[in-house]
Image (tube, rainbow, N blue to C red; front, side):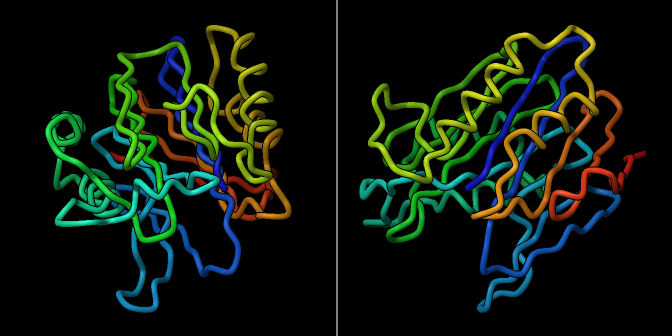
Length: 228
């Protein structure tokens, strides 16, 4: 469970709540990016979410209920690896967009990971394996929770986060032109979770190349990293 937002006002501001349980995570700031990493038993720490110095942001909410069409059936590219390539700057945002226009992507068996991607210009790419993708050229704002934005009437599920989506949409619809880091944290705090606990809340001021984050909903203790 997660919530991703991108806001294009005077600045491009990206927000991300990572809601996850039963997983070891850490935030690792480097000169190339600030990565939220998950400890995978097979490969170790995997950089799955976060921002890079180029201005890209990668979020990866799960879709509830999972869509069987996202299961691998052949040699499709796994959405996780495609997202990691963008986060680590092995691919550009445009290359990822071009790739999903011409190739199918999959998720892991039995679980549908979606992509909420943005670039330094505030463009947004939402990808749902098995369903397709949608590209938004510098939208005023975009939100992704835990249901597919490509389905008009998604199946109802208690973890889909429709309430989170509606709360964020209400706040962003009335946001002022000077929407900034503190405003984004206010939205993330309003949609933070406890059952599937919000482990990391992260805000990216793209113009300033500055990343801010807090751990375990401690919104009074925010760390930051600025890229040169």
